[in-house]
Length: 475
Image (cartoon, rainbow, N blue to C red; front, side, top):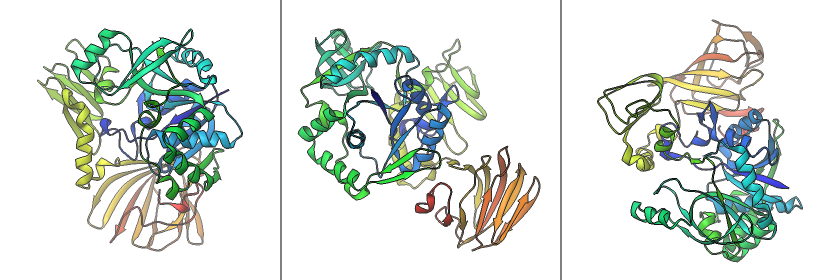
């Protein structure tokens, strides 16, 4: 049996401002109104409908929501902090081993676009024999151009009908080296997809990266297990032990040193959706090679990509530009500098710009909120609550709140009182008052919240009870 392991970490900073740390690219609906994570679940569901997903604690509800939408179930291993792919894969292999299984584990990044599901599944099945024989099997993409954005795998002698030995891994090359590699004809792009037995990975880690294995073993030995209301299981490795694992990729930790490695070529359509160059290429072009999403208008432009879903965005006489508009941040980028967007995000974080990390509209397990306006001692939010969902029973030490229902029906708990509000009705929550907002209806509840007080931060929440087990955090 093959168990898919979806690696759902990463912040996707090269796709800022659409992708941000609190809402990274794998959860953004980029293709046909579906996220890359959702599409990944659909792609591997033909192999096994039960998954293990590695994700950050703060993204757990985005993961479960996408799994429910895709009609799959599974276990979520919640990393206390990002430590790169080697520790993440170690956690998954240890969890599988604890279930007294030695299944084949298929590690897939959550941010790839592979529309040909049938060819993908067939290629994975072709790697089963080598994986069962104890090899670490990886899958390389047949290159279509001399890319400098991907690492390469040089393949060697044939192992069986489908797989080849791995000669070496090659770092992202410059353009001259990339052209030379393609001319040799024996290289593939490194896709970061692996198929192997749990025992194979654990033995390889013990041989090449024992400090990673030891830290992860201790973290999993002291793990917490939670059965969520959604039916998914949350596994939380012990943070202090896990923090001792070196932050390193599986390529550096194991693959570059291991002897028994195999690679299979994948000749289907594939995109590592890691930059605006890739996103632009997924959009149809006009006669002047302009690509427009949303309300963009390119006048007298050449080779310009406009992402403008919220309002008119006009480009006049531009060439070779990316123009990315979001409600609270705009990126204008020469196409030759797209790989440097992450450097800009790092600068924004140093300057404490909230837009580097969060969107104006923030997803929550019960729905969402949108910070419409903020000023001295006040903040205005639009709040959407899913049918049947509730916010936590809570209070605030520093702010009062005024609620106005604009759509749907709200059930309000205010102290000992519980009452309903319909459209155009309102209520007031004084400072320190215990309260809860719920949606008892069958349509989304939408309301306007006006906060007032000397401190309006999201950490001014004292949770007394919560449907989603969030008394432990501030999300």
